[in-house]
Length: 238
Image (cartoon, rainbow, N blue to C red; front, side):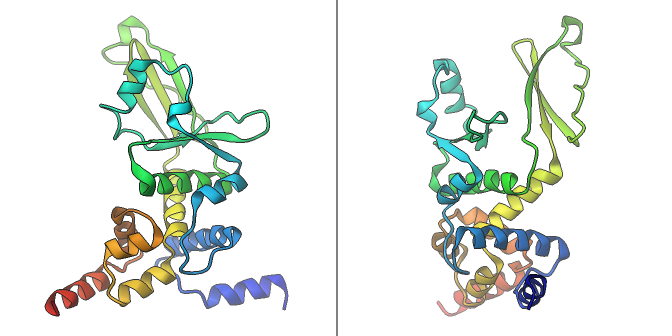
């Protein structure tokens, strides 16, 4: 049997989500799990996988030259506005630094890091953040910044007379998050646990993710109705 025949045979017998879009996401996620060497129901550790993507996770407290005001802002009023990210410019050895929000806890950090890993394995171009000096006459109604060719949208905000512009590709972001989540909570094992009547919290605990991520996976893979049905059955038997 050729490699192509073996692959087609395997895919044909895989348990995949019902929609074509989610099937494609799931197949890529299973590729990541295969690369990581984990079994169908085994939790995946993104921190172990990160080194293969040449991502170096640096503790937030190790960041130098960050002003006390900026540190207080990032860990205070803006704590829920960022989850983490990888530097767009690599180090001389080709690795990229990843910073994770220390206030989000291990479960959310795992999901954030897995998303960054997915970006690398999918070959996505890193987002760029640029500070553009806005002319005084445009402060109240700044002209839109120019987008890069790869960007579909651009997020902008003004800071101290500057306009911060970030290239943002919605399709890339959706794919990276969806594939990262699928790699953490694979459909086959998820469906088995839903059918067996396990709660979202129990599923999350098994895969070491947040309950919100477990529920997201249940919903996007069209298992929510079945999940609610087994949930109702559990309530009736209490």
